[in-house]
Image 1 (cartoon, rainbow, N blue to C red):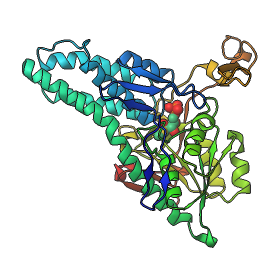
Image 2: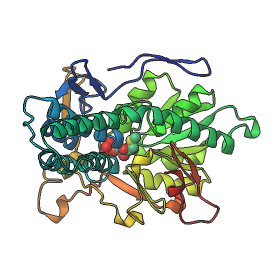
Image 3: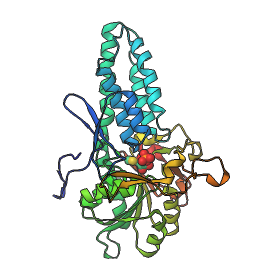
Image 4: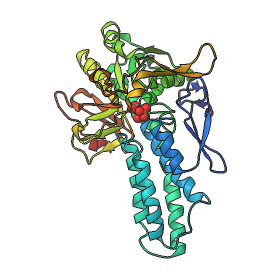
Length: 396
Ligand code: MRU
């Protein structure tokens, strides 16, 4: 599950990073089942768009860039397989692939990277409007190339974002009062398991570490799915980055008692005015950061920016099944295997009664007025003092 170790520009050797997805020389795509992490590493082949849809919907793979990669790669696998029809014209290719893209896009609604990846393939489908079998075959190759590029382009830009974000935060907070390393907080999981490698917010934390500018990375458990306690913990411990897990309820206490230098999060969708949808719990971290005068930084590739929406009120927030909030999954200490344990009384989350309701949005929206800066691979957009929006178009 791990890529090769890397030596950083500063001469630090990082242990191999985890990966969520791998492709063998024959082109077979496999994903690590993230529902079983960190205790069990199980690779599952994903060969068809249907299998990719199911893996994304059930969160065996998750994280905005990673689900876009898998969806795109499943189109490539399908077009390379014996199940792909013989196409007589480019129009046949578009008629066949178009509905597959619509289907994959519907698997999760909030992360715009998935929609953007499917739009990229739609643009390729439109690029060859006429012709016969030869043009159809060439178009199929172009779609496959673009599908692979969705995955391949992700890792390099993450390194750029990591460097830009780390430099910006160090300029804001480094060196003050003789400070040698920053204390930062992150939410959810944004590292190599959520992307094609290196990560977004975790990329900034890794870059701070590589530059010897990190004191401690605090990470919230991120209930109900525990992306923090299961996945971010695994990434940070694998990289030997100084880290400390906190319960989601401890964010305020931590900011009260420790000199925190920044809250750094990823994003699932950033809209034109800078409002940002990210994992549930991000908004409360932003409110607390403002109260404690801590910079709140959003790190995401340009593919996460949706300039078609004006404000966060227009973002479709995914509601997860109620039952997910009533369960905890983890290692059974008696059997050593994975177990799913119900922590709420029977009926909670499943009955029509008014005392059995569960509120389980997967994401929340942080208003731009609480965000200090948005980092993409193109640069850092900083909110002007007192402004209620951020010019994210300037870093797209
Ligand atoms: O529901 P998830 O686990 O897919 O949510 C993931 C997040 O919210 C991440 O913070 C976001 O996708 C950015 S990941 C680089």
